[in-house]
Image (cartoon, rainbow, N blue to C red; front, top):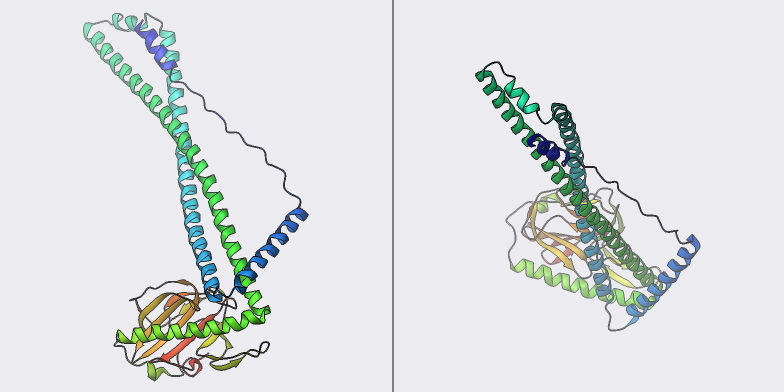
Length: 383
């Protein structure tokens, strides 16, 4: 009877694995319908944007600032979602590998159990007794009893290991199922953030296009940029009150400083500028530098970061104090790599070239100031 119970216990631990299914895909919408729908949405968006920009109570720079903030938020959330998706995929791959290893170990245990079942079956109900009582001496009989006890313990361990592997497989299957669901949710979240960033980028492009076409909007933008320069002057004045760094020697590098970005090309120089289309006249206190979007922005001389934040009209702005009342300003960055209080060295990257706060697309606005007065950067930097 004991042998039968052992055989029954061994048989109960053998299992089979289930297969995965696939769902059918829905037919795609016709490309012409997609194009018509997209054009209609773009026209409606541009109409709403124009109405928003034309309202006297709405600041053009504030509108661009809000779009930039929305775009930056979408990009940050996109990076987080993509990072989470990568981590989840890595965890899923590791879990699947563990599942395969556990499945293989289970198969090996099952093979050993089958061999033991065949042996027990051949022995029959009286097999145990025959092994013991066929011994020539009592000592041989006792040794065979001890061997049978060891064999029974080994069988119990094998049964327990098989059950443990079965449970581990079930846990792994549930984890893989849950991770697959999470992966689907994250993929949808990544796509949603990507579409939000794309929509914000398109809205900004449309706003800039409207500013170039509408004379009234262009005139208002010039006035707001003047007010932005006034705000920047106040920021510089507050920085000066806090004291200057102790670094010396900036003045001795006049005309020998390296450009703040690789492949720099002066798009708008320092000084009085007249718009060829609208005939508006402005005083440019720095230089507009065209280069590839995403290019690293480099500090032209060692110093301390005294400002690294958003400023309306300048987007992401970094101001570096070089000592002896000299400052350099880097505006419209696409991202920041430094914070206020950081010490920086010459040619250290502080961010990337972007279009934050910009009314004309990606470029770097660069200033050199002595005290509170802007000076011509082209006399200091070898462009």
